[in-house]
Length: 352
Ligand SMILES: O=C[C@H](O)[C@H](O)COP(=O)(O)O
Ligand SMILES: C=C(OP(=O)(O)O)C(=O)O
Image (cartoon, rainbow, N blue to C red):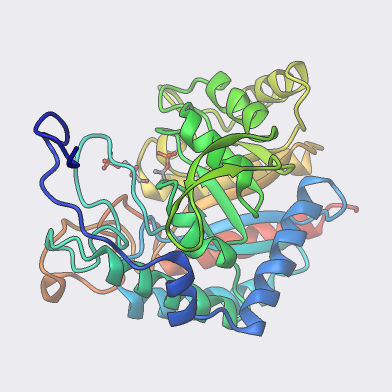
């Protein structure tokens, strides 16, 4: 019997075989320095989550990466800031290559690196891996959203922290993938604010799973995982924000009731900033205030930040403004640096 028969793949237009994860690793190898950055950062995040390291994890950077020059420019500034504030903050750059869309839209640099619907995924994977190697070579760890369950085989060795997004936190496929990720993984609450989907995600991802995956050679493989020991909850707001002390106390109680580690990261953006990028600084101030008031469950924060504030509509690359987001609106660099410096300064007043 020929494959496909006349009765299947009726809506599939074409399939094009891509290079394997092993081939991409050969094309763009991880340097020793990059690997050290990833390993040290994963350990630091794990120590923060287990309470051994009192610093605040900060995942900060563009909503999405679309321009490599701008991403490197941003990373250089962030690395200097990370070194300056390293006594209080452990800074990981948000390096998001895959965007989950509410309906449709540009799905990120891996899916469509030329931003023209040419979907040159093979080139997208190369660009993404080269950037991750460069950033880790600078000593700047990278965090990302694990969206496509195949991508971690290509890039996962260069990722220090991962998120499962609000739109996929209830998906079994993503929980299975999370159970095998090498980095600590945060589960976001649902877009409607539901915490249970994230808690169930954490419970599921902590367990071993067996599922269909791909191996290094790109072959379909029965994949069996160990379970991820460093799952945590990310509060990103829903119908209303959920970063305030009452919402955080409710999340803590829900984590305790589910017998999960009481570890929370607050996403200062999305529904917590009511999608107004400038309000992220106020959310951060509030969260730092909660920590100064004695909160010990908030282990980290997330900020969407770029070189310049706001966002712009997707256009031809030559028509885009440099350093401005083409997805969610972001804080600009100056206010990002000022708010992180202020957060560190306030945290320094706290007896450890
Ligand atoms: O952070 C990114 C966006 O909020 C998410 O990808 C959804 O984007 P959309 O609602 O513009 O599709
Ligand atoms: C899509 C994102 O967030 P969320 O899943 O919370 O909407 C994001 O952080 O890019």
